[in-house]
Length: 186
Image (cartoon, rainbow, N blue to C red; front, side, top):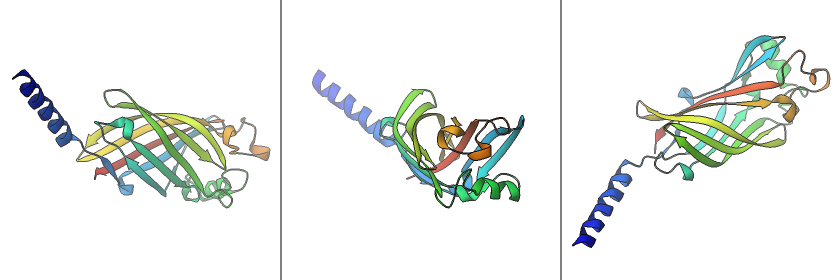
């Protein structure tokens, strides 16, 4: 009798978990955003990227199975001025003709408790790939899943700003990449 009761309890627990398992993966570009912050001559500056493609699979009940791939169209940069957009597209900065896309691809997701996670992966910009760990949160909002986070990179590690721009006295080395990716359930 105990075995039957345990088997039934296990079945109900599994069924309850399966019934609540929701995988988020239909990225909603109109509700998503990738931005960056940096310092230029000591003044805080911001920019965004208008075009990016992302593939996402995330089940809060099984975060270890999650995967993410984001490709950013570097030519879609918006620095707040047309002159700035043209400058960062040049070879000394993003070199959008030679390297039109920046890419992040996850390799592991580590739950930290609550809505917090660490997403390990590879970030590629201008042909240089670095291992990164991105702190992120996941919350359910209005029937969708929202992933938010920020990662500080050093632009020098990716050869962003060459020649006269290689020094960090005018444009700081640290760049904070911020994201908000909204995905509907599959």
